[in-house]
Image 1: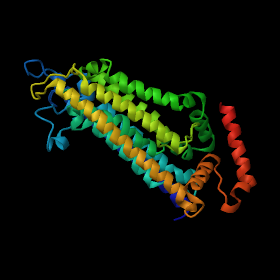
Image 2: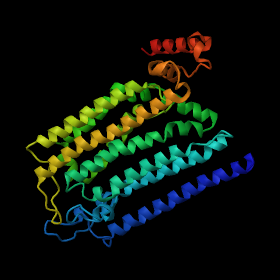
Image 3: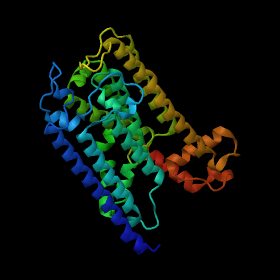
Image 4: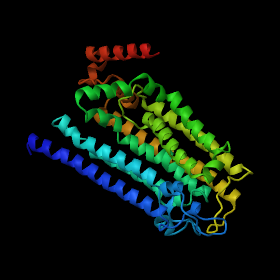
Length: 388
C-alpha cells in the first residue's frame, strides 16, 4: 500500500474512533435522563429507609444508576450485576478515543513507523479494568461490602494504572504530534512540575499517603456512605497508581529512568505499605461503616477484616506478578546478545551500561575500550551530577 493511500486511510480511523465515542456519550446522556425521569428505577440513593422509591438523585444518575445490591455477591452475580457510572465511562470513552486517534496518526507523522499493537492491547486492557471496577459487580456492592470495595481499590490503584502505563500514552502523544507540538509536550513531561511529581520519593510518598490515608484514618467511612466521595476516591486511586507505576513498569520519556534494581526496590517498599495496611485492617476492632441496605446482610467487622486480607494478600500478589514480569524482562535484555559472554555478572554490567547510555559494543572483547561507549558513559555521569 502506498504512503499516500495510508495517509488518506488513517485519518478516517481517527474519525471512526471519535464517531463511536460521540455515540457512546449520547447513549450515556440518554441513560442518565432516563434514570432521572424515574423510569430507570431507584438505586440505593433512590430509596427511603422503608424501602419505597424516591425520585432518583442527580448524584445517583451520574454515578450509580441501575442495579441495586441484593443478596450475597457470589456465583453468576459476579458477572451479571452492573450499574452505570456515567461520569467514569465518559472519561474512559474520551481517553480511549484520544489514544486510538494517536495510534492512527503515528504512521502519518512518522512514515514507515507503526505503533506496537502490544502497547495498544495493554492500554485497552487498563481501560477495561477501570470500566469494570466502576460499573461492574464490585462497584454495585462497593458501598455495602468493604471486601468488594477493596477488590475495586486494587483494580484502580494497581492493575488498571499498570496496564495504562504499559500502553505508553505519553510517548504516543509525542510520536503522533507534529514536530513543534511534540517538542512542547516533551518540555512539559520533562519539566519541573512533571519531574517533581514523578520523582521516586514523591511518587512513593503519594502512594503511601493514598493507601494509608484512605483506609486507616476514618476517611473510608465517609467514602462508603457518599457517592461523590467515592468518585473522587476512584480518580485519586488511578492518578496515584499511574504516578507510581510510570516509574516501575513505564518506558515513558520522563526525566527519571530507573535501573531495574531500583524498580524492584520501589515495588518492595510499596508491598510493605500494602502489607501494613492489610494487617491493621485484619486486626482492627472497629468496622468500616457500611451503607445499610435491606438486600444485603453482613457482619461489618468480619467484612472489614476480609477486606484487610484482600489488601494484604491480593495487593502483594499483584505486586509480585509485576516484580516477576520486570525480572523476566531484565533477564531477557541481559541474555539477548551476550548469552555466552563472561558470565552473568558481566552480562548484567553491560545491560545496565546500555540502559543508561543507549550504546552497545559491537565487539564484546573491546567493550571497555570503545571510545563512543566511554564518551556516552561520561556524558551520563555529567547529567547525574547536574541533576544532583
